Amino acid sequence: MIDLKEKSIQTVRWTFLYQFANYAITFVLSIVLARLITPTEFGLTAMVAIFISIANILINSGFSSSLIRFKDSTPDDYSTVFYFNIFISFFLYVLIFFSAPFIADFYSQPELIPITRLITLVFVIGSFSIIQNTILIVDLNFKKQVILSLISLFISVVVAIILALKNYGVYSIVWQTLIQTSVYCILLWATSKWRPVGRFNIKSIKKLWKFSSYVFFTGIFNSIADNLDNIIIGKIFQSNTLGLFVRAKSTRGIPQNIMSSVLSTTTFSVLSKVNDNIEEFRIKHLQFYRITIFFLIPFTIAFYWICDDFILFFYGDKWAQAIPLLKILSIGLIPIILGILISQSIMSFGDSKLQMQLSVVKRIIIICILPTGFIFGMEKFMIIFVVAQYIGLVIDFYFIRNKLSTLWMDYFKPIVHPLGFSILFSIILLSFKSLEICEGYLINILVDTFIMLLIYMTLSFKFNNSEYRNFIQLIPLPKFFKK
Image (cartoon, rainbow, N blue to C red; front, top):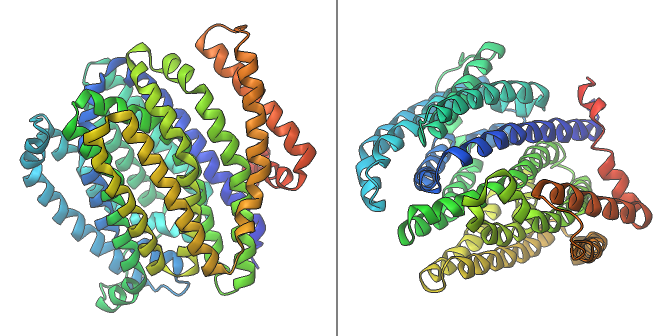
C-alpha cells in the first residue's frame, strides 16, 4: 500500500530539488548570455516562442495527462499516443518550416527565418520521449526524472556558454534548447524499458480524447493568450524593448517555473490518486493551498524589494530599463501560482471541461486588455495586465469553491498571517534601507534577504506554528537521498 503522504513529500522534494538545480544552472547561463548578447537578440527568440509553445501542445494533445489520469491505461494506449505524437510533430515541423518567411515578414525581421526553422526542431525531438517521461510521472519516479533532466541540462548549458563565448549570439540560445531536449530523449530511451510494443488503436484515441480534448483546447488557448504580450510588444515596439520585457519576464520566470512545476507535478499526481474520495481530495487540496500561501506571499513581496539590485548585479547596467517591468511582473506571481494550483486540482478531479472554461474566461479578460498597450505604453500596460490576472484569480476561487464545496474562508483565512508578516518585514526593511548602511548590489541582496527571511520565519514560528511545521517538513536535504 502506497503511503500517499510520504509519496507526496518525496515528490515535492525531488521536484523542488530539480527545479532549484535547473534554475541555478540556467541562471548561470542567463548571466553569461546577458553579458554577451544584446536585448535585441533576446527579443528575436521571444518572437518565435508562441509557435514552439502551440506546437508542443498540438503534439502532446493532452494525451499524456489522460494516461496519468486514468489508472487502467493499456499498452495499446501508450503505443497509440507515441505514434500519434511523432506523426503530428513531423507534420507541424514541415508546416512551420515553410511558414518561417511569413513569420519573419510579420515582425520585419528576416533573420527569424533560419532561427525559426532550427529551434522548432525541438518539438520533433521531444515527441520521441513523451511516453517514457509520462511513465515516470505515473510511477511518481521523480528521482530518476530529476537525475536525467539535470544531466541533459548541464551538458546543454556547457555547450551554450562555449558558443556564446565564440560569438554565436542568439544561436547559443537555440542550440542550448536543442541539445538539452536531445540528450534528455536519449537518456530516457537508454534507461527506460518501455518500447512501443502495442499497436496503433483508434479506440485508444477516442477513449483518451474524451478527457484530453479539454486539456488540448485549454492548452492551445492558454498558449496563444500567454504569448500575445510578446507578439504585441514585438510588433508595436522595437525588438530591443521586447528583449527588455523578456529579460524581466524570464527573471520572474525563475521562481515562477520552480513553484509551478512543483505544484503541477505534485498536485496532479497526488490528487489523482484520491479523486474517488471527495473528502480526502478536499483536505489535500486545502493542505496544498495553505503551504503554497505560506511560502508564496512572502516570497513575492521579498522578490519585489530585491529586483533592482538583482538585475543590476547579475545582468549589468544595460538591463536597467527592465527593472520597473520586473517589479510590476513580480506582483503577478501570486495569481499565476495560485491559478496553477487550482487548475491542477480541477484537472486531477477529472473535470477538464471546467478547467477549459475557466481558462477561456480568464484569458478573454487578458486579451481584452492587451490593446491598451497601443495607448498607455509599456509600464501602464503591464500594471493593467497584472490587475487582470488578479481578477482571474477571484474567478478561480469562485469555481473551485463550488466544485469542492469549500468555503471562502478556507482560502482567505490562510492569507492573513503571511500577508501581515510580509507587510511587517517590509516596513522594517525599508527603515533599515533608509539608513544606507550597506553598499554594493550583492551585499544589498544578501542583507535584505536575510532580514526578511529572519523576520518572517520567526513570526511564523511564533504565531503560525502549524503551517510553519508543514512547510519545514518539506525542506530537509538529507531526506532527498533516502529511498
